[in-house]
Length: 171
Image (cartoon, rainbow, N blue to C red; front, side, top):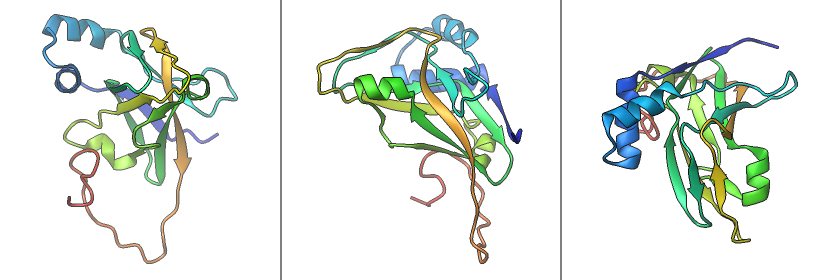
């Protein structure tokens, strides 16, 4: 196994900005309590490919509902690698839990963005069986897998990232 990455928490200031953006007017004390409870992603077994992302709070998602979760996590990785985010397999199977962007792509240069590379996960319960999803704080709801990638021999990309989704396209 190649060891190519490390997870960190974003600063409490960055987490607070993300949390208020996602959930509105929440007290600084409550956000600080949530921040202190954030767990770094980890694999459940030696054979697991995915690093579980844990919910910092309890939440329920009824069928058709969507949630944007600030994870409080950032990932530093070597150039030539990407972190792909997926729902946890069991939740996808039982609830049709889906990421709104189908697969989250966390590029290696996202770590240095002005938002500290804060990873948000936006999920929807797409159940057609009328099942409400309940997730307890500290429970895995998504997973991230590091994947190596290649580039073309005539690649000349020289842009610098400074933001999140859509920040590299100029739109």
